[in-house]
Every structure is written in C-alpha cells, then in structure tokens.
Amino acid sequence: MNAAVDTIRFENVSKFYGEVLGVNRITLSLSPGITTLVGPNGSGKTTLMNLMTGLVQPSRGSISVLGLEPSNATEFFCNVGYCAQFDSFPRGLTGFQFVLDSLMLFGMSEEDAHGLAAEALERVQLDTAATHRNIAGYSKGMRQKIRLAQAIAHHPRVLVLDEPLNGLDPMARAESMSLFQELGRQGMHVVISSHILDEVDRVSDRVVLITGGYLIAQGNIHEVRQEVRDKPMQLLIRCDKPDLLASKMFAVNHCVEARLHADGRGIFLRTGDVDQFYRLLNEIAIEGAVKIEAVAPFDDNANAIYQYLIGSDGSTV
Amino acid sequence: MSVFEHDYRPYEGPTTPLWKRPLVLARYGLAEAWGSKITVGLAVLGLLPCVVDLVLMYLANNPVAKMLVVGGSKVLEINERFFLGVLETQCWFALLLAAWIAPRLVSFDLGDNALPILLSHPVSRFGYVLGKFIALTLSLSYVTWIPLLVLFVYQCYASPVPWAMGHLGIAFGLFVGAAVWVVLLSLIGLAVSSWVKWRVIATGAMFAVIFVPAGVGGIATAILRTKWGLLLNVPVVMSELWQRLVGAPNIFQGQMDLPNSAIVGVLISASLVCVGVLNARIRAREVVRG
Image: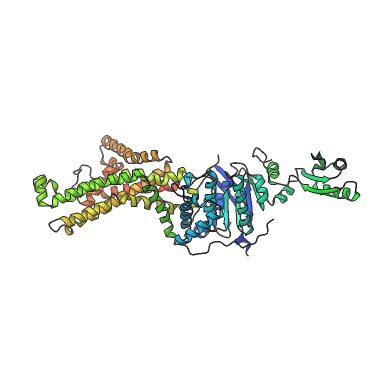
C-alpha cells in the first residue's frame, strides 16, 4: 500500500486565528493505530484536530489525510469521524435520531442508516431504551457515548476524538479504551486527545506532545523518553541486595539518585547515562555479588514525558 | 507497537447525491421550528386574516349576501387594492413568524456549539445555510404565498363573471411579492440569528434590523428633504414593490416614488450584507486561544 494513502500528513502547517496562534509549523506523519495528542489546555490540540478533520483550513502548509485533501469534501469527510470535545448537540433529537440524521448527512440511504445507527449504538453499549429518549435527558457519560457512536457510525477510516474519556465512569472508560484499541488493531487511525495520561500510556501506539502551538515531540513513548537525554532516567531494579547495588552504582558519577523500595527488595535509581548504566549493571550481574531479578524503566511513560518536556505549568521545560 | 491487522472495512455502500444532504438539515430545521407550540400558534394566527378575507370574498361574489350585509356598496370590491391589502397583512405576519423561528434554527446550533459536529459531515457551510434557509422559507410560505394563491384561486372560482384571465397579473404579483419578502426575511433572520446567540435577543434584533434603519431613513428624509432616505425604510420599499407587482394604485401618490432600480438595488444590497454576515459567522471553529 502506498504510504501516502495510509497516513495522515501535516507539512509545515500553521494556523492563525487573526493574530492568535493556533499551531505553528507542524510537520507530522501519523500511521494507523492509536495516536494521542498530549498537551496543556490551549496548547493547540483542538486546532490540530480541527485541521485534521477539515473543519478549519491551515493558514500555511498542507494537510493530507489518507491521500485526501479537505478541499475534496465529499470523500474526505466520509473517511473521517469526529467526536468534538463540546457537550453539544442539535436540539430536540433522540440519541437514535442524532446518529441516524448524521448518517444521512454522510449520504446513507434511510434503510442503511437505520442498520448502521443500530450497530454503532450497540458498539458503544448504549442502552437501547435510552437511544429513543431525548439527548437532553442523558447523563454526561451517555452523551459522550452517543457522540462516539455518531463518530464511528459511518465506518470512517480516521477517527478523531477530542477528549473522549471526559465524564465517563471507570467502567465506561475501560469499555471505550477497549473499543479504541480494537479499532486501532484493525488498522484504523484513531487520534485521541486526552488529559488522562495513565490511560494514554496503556493504549497509545504513539504520542504527539504539543504546547503553545508548537510540536514538542512525537513518536512511541519509549522512543521519546530515550530522546530526552538531559533528564536522568529512573529505573526500578529488583534484587536481593539493593544496598550493595546502590553503593556500587554510586561509585560512578552518572548515577544521581538512589532510593530503596519500600519492601526492601528493590531500588529506584536515576541515571544520566542509560548506556553506561546498563553496561555497569551487566558487570555487577556477572560478578554475582548481587542477584538481579528484574530491571524496568520507571519514568518511561506519558506522564513523565509530559512533566519533562512540558512541565506542570504547561510551559516547555 | 501494535500489530495492525488491516481488517477494518470502511463503508463502501451507495450514497445519496450531494445535493440531497442539505435536505436532511432542512428536515432537522422544520422539526425544530414546528416543535414549538408558539410557532403553531403564530401560524394559526397568521391564517386568521385569510379566513376573514375569504369571508369578504364570499360576500363580494354573492349578490344576495352582499346586498344584505353592505347594501350593495362598492366597498367590497375584489381587485388589486384588495389583494395588496391581503399581501401586506400576510407578509407582516411572516415577519412575526420569522422572528420566532429563525433564532431556533441557527442560534440554538451556535449556542450549543453544534456546528463543528454538523460541519464535520460532507455538508458545506453553504449546505448548512441552505438547509436552514429551506426550512425557514417553507415555514414562511405557509402564511404567505400559499394562502394568497389559494385566495386568488377561490376568487377565480367564486367570481360570477370571468375574472381569472384578466387578473393573472395579481397572482404573479402575489407570488413574486411574497417570495421576495420571504427570501429577504429568511436571509435577515438567519444572519441575525448567526450573530446573536441568545434566542430572545435574536428575535428582538430581527425587528430592530427592520425598523431601526426605517426610523433613521425617515429622519434623513425629513431633515435632508430627500426621498432617498426611504431606501433604508424596508416597510416603505416593500410596500412600493408590492403595489407595483400587484398593479394597485400608488398609495404614496407620487410623493415618495422610488425608482424600481433603487428598490431592487436596496433588496440585493440587504441580501448581500446578510450573506456576508452568514459567511463570517457560520464557521466550524471551536476554540480561539488568547
């Protein structure tokens, strides 16, 4: 398959709202799977999503979604499903009517639309009786589900979800995440923006970090973490003699911090040079003085990357 | 990294032609507009003058009833002047209805931030406005040209002498006059509603847009002693247009005669301003940082 027709591409894209910067000089290439946009409020995530869904036009640069440009509206929009972050609907509709009319706007016949609407509502596990009630009477979680159903009902190839987990209870959140994972596995492009970084970690194939309208990093979480060389990496080492291991590690200057695990069977280490650290750890293991059971990166996750690259106040670090 | 199975199948079934999509929005709009009891009440109220006109036409065309009720005077003559009165009455009722319905069509979508959802479908901003426009014009037609033409047809049927062929110009005038007003009202209604998110204020703004410039135009006309200030007066402009279209005698008796080209120019300009406002306001943009 031609790579261009299976990727979402941003080429040097900028978007200004008058004098206000939306996003600036974004160059991205997203392949199938789950991509999560991470950034503080007002960082440009929604602008990026609006650009991706053709709702706003870039001030500069070009966007192609699966080889289609937003100017080719008919084909473009049929391939994109969008779940906006706003808890908003056309007034006076039942859940089923909302999805049905949405499908008819996509050009489905009424008969096809009925079948697809029922399928989508079943997929998001919205109670059948509830789908025939007015949306105004829905709980926040139900409204989130109906928006999701509307976004997936027409079988798009790209699903753009702006904070789709907001307002969902833990069970519904888990169900939604599992649906995203299933769609991602099937080869669909699922682009999510979320503030729930733990869940981002669990499902994302890649993250895009953005702040102040600028792209900070993109790629697989582990790859991005390894690129952040100026922040010492934290590792958890499970072993039988953590105090001995700590003393050996402190003999070299790239280890900047060591902390014993609460159960006394492990140690948290922070190192500025991962390569040297692993070399030393190999040597210690070969010596046999310390029996090493497991080694795992401890800050190799979206939350840590967010803290390192963006910081808790939203400004780049 | 996930293993991508590539077994996802997008929808590849038949789709309806693109031109049909705004009709879905029109259906939304009609359901929204007529879901209100006040809309139904206004529409019923708007048809009451037609019922009165129908009775008058019956009386005028029935010599016995005419003799009994008005003593055979010529007060009840069904002619261009009578239909001009009917046209004006219905058209002003249409303003009431438009002021109520138009904000329900657009202000709600803006207030609820529903535009991004709707515009992420293969329907353009033009398609969105067209859908709402169709819903509004159909709703206004219900109290304007449809009952007017029904009255005309009734007069053709009830007249004891051959009447229709000699007065086809009235039917044309009724239809075109009402259609021009309905289109103008729809554009003004949608433009005002796209500008004002609050429904009640949008309803008030509809009247303000029609009558405030009329006041300003009246002041300009009086102070500058020129008839051109009347071009800002939509009621006067429309009255002149309707009178000419129906072929009724000039109610302003030549004192404030506006040229046809000026009337057409004003109506086109007003429509273009409304289109400009809609173009500026109907956008899918959600978030502006700053």
